[in-house]
Length: 128
Image 1 (cartoon, rainbow, N blue to C red):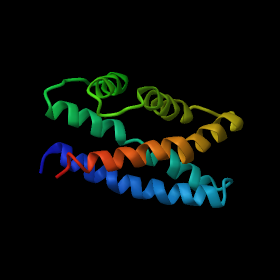
Image 2 (cartoon, rainbow, N blue to C red):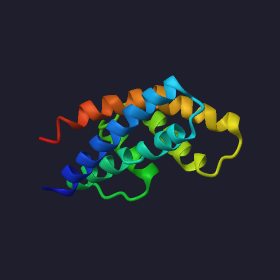
Image 3 (cartoon, rainbow, N blue to C red):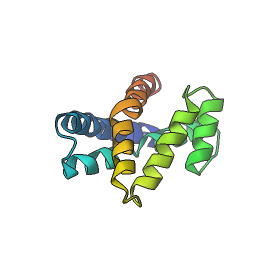
């Protein structure tokens, strides 16, 4: 099994947790455990992109570089949304303003989740 295949399997497991966390968040947006699950479970996507690019001869290491190259190679179609997801991931662990945290959590459970759902379908194509 290649590193990319291992990473995709890890992403798929994390995505299932994210799906459950999104559902739990929509049922009770005040549950702190749901907040933590949302934040942690959408981390692996950019690493799948990195391994995919690496397997195709593109060497990039930093998350923003990975996203830019993946967009350039049309692996993802909404590069700005991926940058927004990355920025949200980076900022939320140091954010104490509850309004900002709630805004990020709404984005994770909404548009970010939808983007990752599309990405999950896309990576199924190069996982076989």
